[in-house]
Length: 360
Image (cartoon, rainbow, N blue to C red; front, side):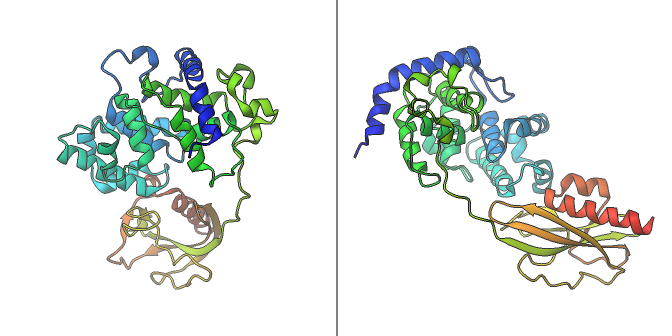
């Protein structure tokens, strides 16, 4: 059944699309991975760069992702080059972008494209969706932006634009399907890649989460949120649920040369496949048994927030460790900092600070 909002979307679509695409022609952001509207007449966007940027941009900002994108494309300029990367090498380069399952999926997808598709990305949404680790959003984004397919690309910026344009009262996350359907009604055959990016740019620069710039918005004439006088209240969000807190112990082990003991975490699960410090389990009452005998120093604690829970890690530090467990890898401090996820970098820094204070 077509809702009144969906019918309205189809009614305003021709004029709203013309207005937004004209605005995008004059105001498109300059991004390292983007082919701007004035340049699309050439060879078009590189699907590898579009795909890589979209994976990086999930759960982070353009400003944070940009330097990673530059380093990745310098180091691995093609999907075939990326496919040849070692797992640990890629994980180290990914450190700081979070959600390490995405890094594993990135490598699996690159290897599938290089091996099964001879280095050429499928050019349809369905073909892209069949690649390992490529979800519905990424497949739609690459299909639209790289191949100019009329796909429905809906990220957080697009959700916000739709919620305001149609004054959607259903709170998030329950309202996501409704917002996706509304965005789908606005998709057309004309310039689908530019349309997807225009919506993203509108949400990022004009239809901002706070203090939207309605006075310069190209679709303000059709916006029910603006007409309500309270556009910033859309999208409606359900009350936040307090995250549960887990606790654990991180062990900072230094050998006589000052190298740090690292372990490789299991491939599945949180921070899977990444280097880490030895830790207890993360739960309500972590076991305090150290991984080896030593003069262990209580070095304080660190806090870190993951998607579904908050973590407090008590840090214990010891130096001059002689016993080298088979599961331990030893790295100098600089290397450890470069490859460890943020939570372990925090714990390592706390342990090293305690070392300096007591053992200097």
